[in-house]
Length: 412
Length: 140
Image (cartoon, each protein chain N blue to C red):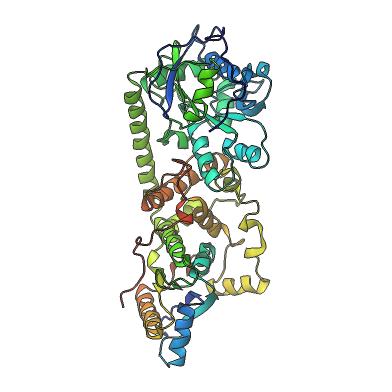
């Protein structure tokens, strides 16, 4: 357990306007505790920022990784912020995902992170971080995860265009937040979320701090859930006081969102199945792959420093290529397009958390995310494994059971 | 036209199946010559990448041979191989490639006869299945 140094009880409910805190105290121990943050004048994001600011100011954390809006208003970038004053203009609910922050988390934490850093993340980023932690690519010792309910994100160029047309920014955020109260996240006058987001059944993050938006009237209040790692310190420093109250219809709202997205997912799987009937149709569909390896670069799970496809493993003698060409009459060059996709799949499919950044990164608009998710679905079910569920679980490739998988061939 | 002769690439572990194959030879067991053996220290050392490479480049079948469960020279290599092969089969069948071309078989050092029988049976099955469709796909 973390020791709290010089924890002094500060004055109750800090003077921030955006935030006034509910009173009743929770009883359950070692479980996530709930609280409510009041929102003044309908400025939901400001209430969140106010809370984060007090975490920084009171030294619960010493730096925070959070998306910040670009000056042009056409997108967001991740920023690592030390000075609480610089939190103005950040956007906890950023509506694009220019990078998978699990990658940033890996850069940040894997070597000598001396200070306590928190990161505001989407559910899929947190799930990727959980996977990377299992692969020893992220260290959670002094890294705190702050999750926020996710309505979905837009493709980066789509959002820039929307913003130019005056459809982005605060107006859009307000509309989304309003929808989230009732669990309506799908249609926004012609602007669609990324495919991966439309089919994502994990809109609710599991983290040390979770901002709850689904099922809350977010122009008045939002829910906050604090995990055991920070609960004591936050209470002692008087940043929040806990209540047992959770929005009464939150469960139903979440259920509705998940049901809708699961339906979309199954429809996309079905569509994909219809498209890829055999190897021929797979090759036809993927023949426009230009081998840029962007899907690999964008993927948070592909963490190898030197990928096997960047090594000499698939270099052959000129004569060898000629022999292959001889046998088939002719071959497509270069020869490793198909094997690239197959091998990438075999490396990351058990841990694919479905963030869909591969889709966003593909210049040929191949449905790579749907491919990985539909194959992943089958393989993850085989091992009853849900990637990103719990850091304590072992990935299927690193473990086994003695009595499982009767796949030995032939009965002799 | 001559009968179709399948080509099998076999990844065999040093301690069991490879030694089993040796025994098949020294005891003069007869089996078809369609198999090309790659000698590894453990079935757990089989990387899916080479199994796929073999299939994509036109091998009609791949045989992965290891020690019986519980008998692995390195304790658990064969269990890990089994998971890897299961994942590989899952991926291939999702891509519309018949997974029956990959055989995982536990054959111990004393089972020379079983090795010969396995190869015979596998060749039969592959003859029935016909040649690997990847051979026809010039862009694979």
